[in-house]
Image 1 (cartoon, rainbow, N blue to C red):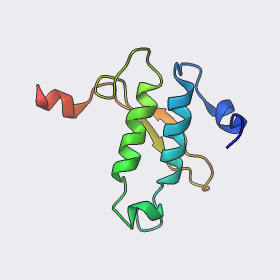
Image 2 (cartoon, rainbow, N blue to C red):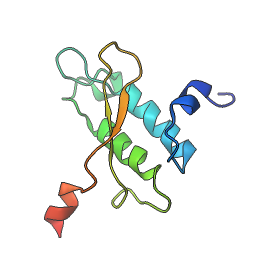
Image 3 (cartoon, rainbow, N blue to C red):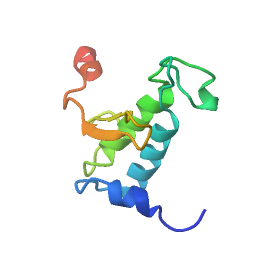
Image 4 (spheres, one colour):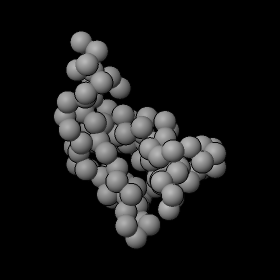
Length: 105
């Protein structure tokens, strides 16, 4: 593996404070996209329902990469939606509250 993926660096939002975490999380999200039957297309998921655990974890990483000092449990979530044309997914912020944390409190 050599150098920086300049395509991914160009797509990185300005508010990202941890570029390495963002790039790695985006790569995982890219690899775990749904197929036509809404199953994860990644061979490592063996046809698991989408969104799979790896995609969900990538979303946590994308959110944590945007906020200084954020942890996986406290960072804002980001959702990567599959692109209609099969290119890189669209990245959009998800709700700022985490329903799982709200119900655990």
